[in-house]
Length: 137
Image 1: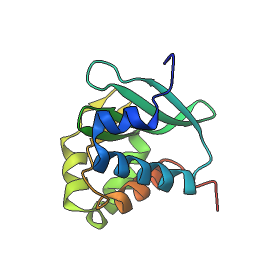
Image 2: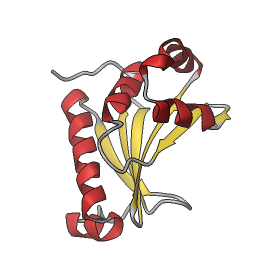
Image 3: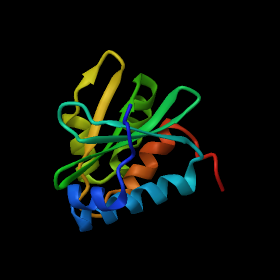
C-alpha cells in the first residue's frame, strides 16, 4: 500500500500533461458508469503506480502510471473470454490484437493497453461491461 497518494502535479510530471489528460478522462468514464472502491498502490517492477477499481473483493480493472506512459489493464476469466470471442469482430483491430497477444495465466487473460489518446475508450467500456454491468446511471 502507498504511504501517500500522488498529487496531480506529481502525476503530470510522471506521465506528461497529455497522458495525464487521458488518465483523467478514462477515470471519469469509469466513474460515470461504476461505483467502485478505488485503491492506489505501488505499480510493481514495471509501473510506478497502480490505481485499482474494486468492489466486493473483485477487481474491475486497474490503471497504471510510469514515466511517459499510462496503462489500462483488465483481466478476463474463462467465461469473459468466451463472451469477448463471440463478439470480437465488433472491437477495433487494436483491441483484438491486444487480446490475442495477451498471456493467459491460471487466473485469466491479462490484457494491458497503453492508450495514447481516447480512441480505444469505447472498446474499454465494452470490455468493462463484459466484466461487470455498470452500477450507476
